[in-house]
Length: 312
Ligand code: BTN
Image (cartoon, rainbow, N blue to C red):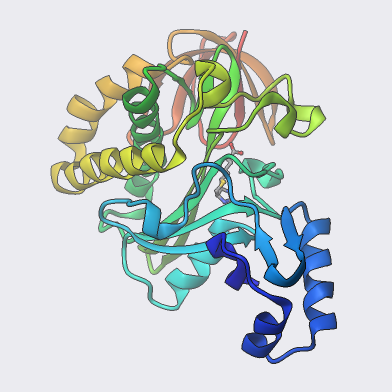
């Protein structure tokens, strides 16, 4: 019932006329939304109103430069929606944005808790580089989010390889890249970004409370998510356009120093957990496709592509 997402009251009668269903069916839908954690107030004759966060992301109130926004209060996953739009031909810059995700996706097939208060969005990109080089884009995204957080709150998140943002060892932001490739060409890329922004500690599910943090928790003050989103899109286009034009030399000589300056992984002793096993290593460098180059205890150099890497 996207109709309720404008924050205004809608009477049961008006809703049933608009949607062509009975008032009992409206009530059922409202109950099902409440069960899914959406707060809906009802006030007698005035009807129903969806309680909006203090700083709604609702498009008329916000702006994300260079993006065409597809907003819905609730999505299963903004990545799923953005990929769907990309398959239908959506242009670069299309951004799926939601207040709440019911099936948020994390890296390595994990779930991503997405309660009210975060910035959950996925951007459709159509890079011209070959797939291996497109793997640089999530690293660029991580730097763009870190800069946006710094610009809006003064906080300085670190980047844990490949693209997690941490503050004090706790996760502030996760990034999920999904890429569609045909005949060695990138058809589209869906860049999912989940920023823990306005949540309080109790908003996180108990099992991740110790491991997650938000901008508001770290600042001890309210955070305007619209400002964070705007700053993120500005910083992202800045890096992304220069990467498209500048190729290898830009990546190695300009972007990499910015990434390394924020890295909390490079130069550290780490534990690598991958499908091939778990081992100790030293994180030495980042390769041309965003891979982590480590030196193992046996002294060999190895490229790590998909793994969880924690600092020892
Ligand atoms: C990670 O595991 O660190 C990646 C988490 C990515 C979460 C974001 S939230 C917006 C977008 N939609 C999703 O379903 N996932 C990404």
